[in-house]
Every structure is written in structure tokens, then in C-alpha cells.
Image (cartoon, rainbow, N blue to C red; front, side, top):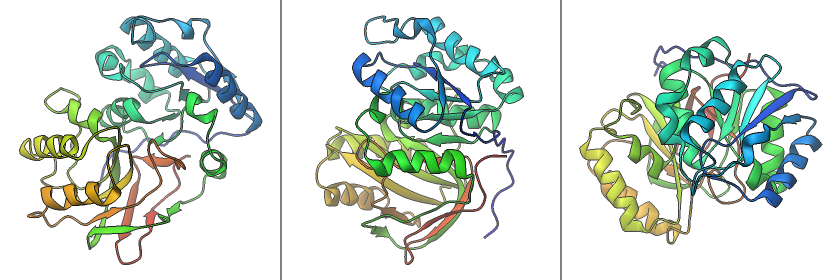
Length: 305
């Protein structure tokens, strides 16, 4: 099955010694964990650039909407910054989508790393700019990340190789083969994009999904809403990461099996991405394929130029 033709903007790869900008587009973060996470980046050979105003707070947000958007826009516009990583998720990325300079991102594609609430940015950057980004750990979580999580991030950033990801304990919800451009991330955040001008089109896409702290019926409700909205009508395949605090994995699998019982969509669970450890770094926006009989997610190309 050929991969669909789509505009893909691959950012230049990173090298040890490069400057990486740190932004807080969503919630405020724990400053102790933040400092430890910066140390992890430095140990990888990167030079974090931290704005003085990154510690701003506005209730449950890391500063005002304009402040958070301006911080992000400035990092994409700064030629000295070679990549960008988020401090934390939480909530707030949705609020700044209309304030982002997508023209600047298209003109200055850069490595961009985040997950959880940052899912809104990862998918919108691809919709608006075709930018290949990285679903991976953020500064706060790097403070206590496993060696597998840290090594995965480092390998993806510097090796620039074609990835093949094999889940440690694969679980087949629905068997089959699928190929398409990778999209997705946090289920809750994707659900909240439905009906907005920034809603992604998952037609022909391989959809990664994960979440944290949502009961099985919450997952059912979100999937059902998205299904009724037509979000999954032409999805090529679904790969499930961690659903930490969402019940037993078998319960989560059963929800997906029930919601998609009438669709011919292959679904493979057990991948190590999301809010649990390890949280492997995976590119979004690249073509990939999987066969449930083999269990591996095989990317078609490296993520960077």
C-alpha cells in the first residue's frame, strides 16, 4: 500500500553542542525537577536556552496566553536556536493555537519535542506547516526519567536513523497491516481539538494514542465522541501507548475493541510512549507501517534532514 502524498517539512538534525530552546506553552512546572531536567539535556551535550520569563505563572498556566505564544514564536524565529523542547504539559496549549506564527515555523523548521497537552501543538504544526516533530519526554519528566527514556531521546536526536520500534509486550486488539503518516498523541487533547479550526484530519494516518488518569468509561466517551464526529472514518491503523492510571491494560484494550468492533482498523497495544516509563521518543509526521503479526512499527525514513 503506497504512502499518501503529503507535504512533509523535516527540520535539520541536531548535533552535540547545539543550542536548544526551552519553552512553557501550557502549565507551570516544578522548579526543582526543571533544573534537574536541564542537567539531563546538558549531559546529552545540548545547550539549553532558558528565557528569563519562563517561570511566570497565571494560575494553572505558565503565564498569559500572549506570553506563552510569544515565547514559542521567539524560539522559532531565533537562528541561534536549533531545536525546542517543552518544560511540561498540563493544560494551556489549546489556548495559544491562534496566536502562533505558523509562517515563521514554516520558514524556520526546527526539532520540536513534547507530549501530553503539547499534543495540540505537535499535530497543529503538522497541519499548518507539515513539520515533523517528536512525541517525547519534556524537561520536568526528564528529571526522573529511566535510562531507556533518556537514551531513546538521545538516539533519535543525534543518530538520524530510520527507526523501528518494537513493543516489549505487544497486545493485538484487532489484527492486520497498516501504513500511513504518523499522527496523534494524548487522547484527551485530541478530543478537545474536535470541532475547532485546528482539528487534524486523520484520513490515511497511523494514529498513536495514550492517556493518563482517565477511567475506562472516560476513554469510551472520548472515543465515541470522536467516532461520531467522523474522526476515525479513514484511519489506517491505531497504536496504543501507556494508559497509566486508566485501569488494567486489558480493560483499556476492551474499550477500544468495543468502540471499533465494526471498523476494519488494525489496533496494536503495548507500545512504550506516553505518561509511563519508559516514554520512547517517536516522530510524528513521518510515514510508517506495522503488521500486528510482527509487532514492530517501522518508519519509512529518518526524521531530520
